[in-house]
Each structure stands twice: as structure tokens, then as C-alpha cells.
Length: 321
Figure 1 (spheres, rainbow, N blue to C red):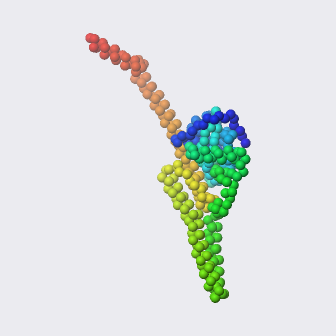
Figure 2 (figure 1 turned 30 degrees about the vertical axis):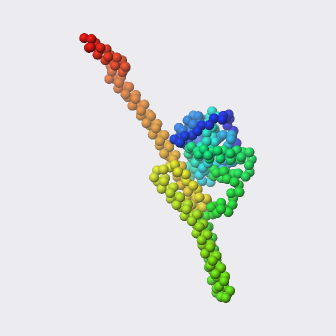
Figure 3 (figure 1 turned 60 degrees about the vertical axis):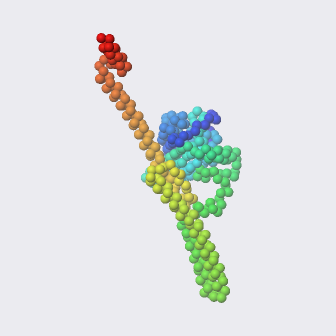
């Protein structure tokens, strides 16, 4: 792991208006940075372009965070988490980073990252968790940027990773078995089968209720949230956080939507930066043209103050006469 030194205890607090944007190639070497990136980190553009992304790595960051970062990105997914970075002079700053693959012609050609101001309460919680991981706490791990207990591999967590197709297949197969058993019991044991038929009917009703709740939580609710995210992005609001709903089909849709959000943010940021550069250049050109025009219109090459002084003298002579 790369260790960047020296470090100080001075923190730079990222502001609401600041957005740190960068692109890297597939090997993690920086290929683009915006002006906020350059100004906050203290590195020049020449120092950053071509340099590895870990040029900003702070010694307080655990290796597990970056291992999870690259594992997530190389799996074609987005990564969201809090990161403590080091400035060139040793100062540090906390950011909330959203990173994802950069796709061109259906192929991943690099990675992009959008960073902004984090929530301070989340910074305190994350800093404590990172410190525990660095100290060797084996009860914590990092998944897709989030610090979670290793015991999170429980039934509810695993259920979110089961595909919707598998969930539907299991539910309908269970209904088929219940109804088929009911029919067989009534057919082959009419006397005793009535009790079992009643029991299987009650069991089927309970299973239907549970299945409905599962499908609502696993399909309907995430679909509504995804529709809300799409409507927000369509209206031009790129600031919202898109929650990922497991690794099933809906999770893949939200992953793709988050990648779209990141790439649109990158494009908008690049357009804004180019626009600012054009406006600045235009102002300089207009200023130079105004100076040239003033010079041409004043053959005696007086400054404005000199012309004003001459006017005052003429007015004084007119009054005296």
C-alpha cells in the first residue's frame, strides 16, 4: 500500500458548491481532473495527469476500503463511500465519493468519480469504523463502500441477492405443490383428506400473504423508488442519491441508472468548466479590444485621468476670464 507523507492535522472542509471530478484509465491512472480537484488538492494539472489515483491516499485509510473500491468497479458496479484524502501539503479533506465505470461502445474504457461535501455525522461514524478496521477489528468489513458487520451475511441480506426470476419460481412452485397435495389428498383419502385439505388451504393462505409481502418489498417498492429516481434525473436534478436494491434484476437497473447519473454529472461538469474558460478568454479579448480602441481614439495618448485634469483646467480658466 502506498504511504503518502508528510501529513498534518489541518482539515480542509469541502463546501456545498465544490465538486471534485476525475477520470482514470483502466489501470487507475488519472486522465482528467477539474479545477476544484486541482485547487483543493494543491497539485498541479501536470502532476496529476498520468499519476496513479492513490497519489491522494491518506495513511489513515484502511487497505480494505480500496480493495473493495476496485473489486466493485471491476465488477461493473458503482461504489459510494466516504474517503479521507491527503492534499499535497499534508492537509486532509473528507469527501463522499460516487465512482463508476466509464462505458464507450458497450465497453468499459475507464472509471470516473464525482466527489462532494459529506455529512459530518457520517464522517465521524466512518472515521471511527476505519480506525477500528486499521486496528485489526475482524468484525467489520467494507462492501460497495459501506462499512458493515461481517455477520451481515444473514437470510435477509442473501434474499436481496436472489434474482426476481428465482423468487417467482420458488413462490409459484410452492403454490403448485400445496394445491397438488390438496387435490391428491381429497382424491385418494376422502375421509381423512378433508382435514389435510383444510390444513393445506390454511397453509396456502398464509404462504400467499407472506409471498405478497415479499414481492412488494423486493419488487414493487424498489420499482417505485427507481421510477422516482428516473423522474428526478429527467427533470435535471442530478444531486439525489440512488439506492441500490441488492444484486437482482432491479439492482442491475439501479446500478445502470447510477452509472448514467455519474456520467451525466461528469459531462455537465466538463461543459461548465469549458464555458468558464471561454467566458474568461472572451473577457480578456474584450478588455484588450477596449484598450486598443481607447488608444486609437486618443492620439495624444492621454490617460482618462489626464483628460479629466485637462478639462478641469479649462473650466478654471473659463471661470477666471
